Amino acid sequence: MLSYIVRRLLIAIPTFFVIVTACFFLMRAAPGGPFDAEAPVPPEILANLRAAYNLDKPLVQQYADYMVRMVQGDFGPSFKYKDFTVTELIAQGAPISAQNGLAALILAIMIGVPVGIMAALNQNSRRDYTAMGFAMTGIAVPNFVMAPTLILIFAIWLKDTPFQLPAGSLGDGGVKHRILPVFTLSLVYIAYLARITRASMIEALRQNFVRTARAKGLPYRSVVVRHALKNAMIPVVTFLGPATAFLLTGSMVVETIYALPGIGRYFVQGALNRDYTLVMGVTALSAALILIMNLVVDVAYAYLDPRVRYDQR
Amino acid sequence: MSTVFDIRDLNVRFSTPDGEVAAVSEVSLALKPGECLGLVGESGSGKSQTFMAAMGLLARNGTASGAVHYGGTNLLTANETDLNKIRGDRVAMIFQDPMTSLTPHMKVGKQLGEVLIHHRKMSAREARAAALDMLKRVHVPEAERRLDMYPHELSGGLRQRVMIAMALLCGPEVLIADEPTTALDVTVQAQILDLLREVRVQHGTAIVLITHDLGVIAGLADRVAVMYAGRIVEVGDVRQIFRSPRHPYTAGLLSCTPSLENRVTATALTTIPGQPPNLQRLPAGCAFHPRCVKVDDRCRAERPALVGDTACFKAEAA
Ligand SMILES: Nc1ncnc2c1ncn2[C@@H]1O[C@H](COP(=O)(O)OP(=O)(O)OP(=O)(O)O)[C@@H](O)[C@H]1O
Ligand SMILES: [Mg+2]
Image (cartoon, rainbow over all chains, first blue to last red):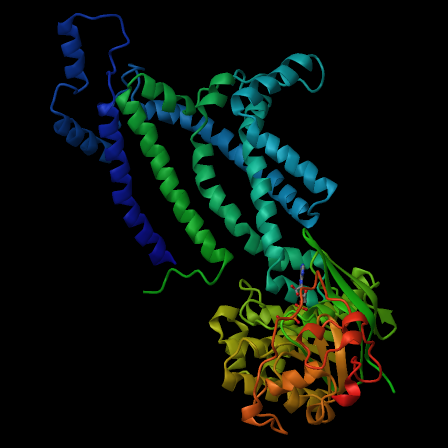
């Protein structure tokens, strides 16, 4: 297994470079440039700016320079937030996004998976329909509707009650400020996880080996937990891999509405501003995360199903 | 005469989007201690569902009525806890497909051991030792090593041996074997049948052998019941039935089966014309009448009851 992991990591390196390269050239191919939005500047100053940011060289030269510095961990200065390097911006924002994302992920697993199992065990009952109704709603209602609704309820209607929750902004940094954003982030994942878990649990319970386990006279609880559950977790893990990568890199909508200084905002703002280096930075980060999560998922498969073996050959 | 396992008037119905399926109708079977009862019939005739119902293993859309008695318990009405005291302990079942009937993510030793941990309250170590012992008794080579293997690391024949070992762990009085050899190749089939014969002799276990292969029955069973479209159409002593089947369907089945004891000559090897009926729209009268060579108007109008050993108006002539 260890040699498999090492091999996969080695394969991930060229993949990573392909992604970063594609991103680099796609960004440059988009019309406009980083200094377009500002008040018109005299051509000499623009030329100076371009020189300062290394934009006056041929594209291939720029690419080579960029890659050389990136390998050394230097993602360059941001074009938009001129006093900061991209590394600084990410170092400031990433922990906030990652903390929220991780909390949302844990919440989603803790609620979504048990709800899905419960629904599967009570298939086509009132509880099942209720749970799946909520799940459908959770999937159908977008974040930008959910977030203001929650703010309306918890920050405004419930103001001056024990249930009041602040509408975001780290402010004093208290945990209370994280509740609404984390909940908003996790809702759609709770919903997806409940649906996926339900479907895969129903499928697992239909397997012949579950019938064998029941014929052995085991209590239904251990039939479910010991025999069906691991099998049912395979599709769940498949979903959780990329979901984790997305959650940890923050959400533009949630961070904007709750005024959180995470990195989720940078994906969209950076692209709109043609902030080449910032976009490259966050892309590199999420590409790396996705590659790692894919590996984690594949390793998890081998744990869930011993028929999956990577060591041969 | 004493009976260990008694199925009385069992009906199994499945509700499906396009109507009710009458999978098993008015089936009664009594199993004596230590005997081997063969249950034959074409695919879909309700053999498996009869015993799935008896073991409380019906699919969610299925319901069973009637009674299935083991000891003083009616398995159809017993609650889950009481049922689980009997399943896997006093009455065990093995299934057709050993490839998919073992849990893929659990080592063989653990799957065997949990039966004893649950029913016999053994410790994990005792259970492992007992499991090893049982694997040796069903002639699993290198048994010790197999305990730590996953099912996919075993051949089909070995997996079926593991299934049988698992069923025998608690020394059941009744073993239901649902097509235990169908998924295996011929030489392995013979070995597994030998093993079942041995189980009967050494453990005195009563065996229900479900199969669509009359050849399998001939070598092992004392009595045989023939099912058609969810009903028992003939039941009786194996030799008697093989020598002189009384129901035309049994006769048809026999003539489809090559090389029996009393060998139906190879030239007579035929197939039964037509298809088994749709269980959602059974024909009026005898369910077999559309395929029967001896059909007359009474067969079309009236369903023959199982009188004595056979359910056929023409039984005398058969
Ligand atoms: N869950 C279900 N829903 C609807 N019909 C079902 C269900 N399970 C079984 N049946 C039907 O019940 C009938 C009897 O099935 P059963 O499994 O007992 O057949 P069998 O005699 O064991 O055949 P085989 O030799 O193929 O195993 C079949 O026609 C089958 O289609
Ligand atoms: Mg069957």
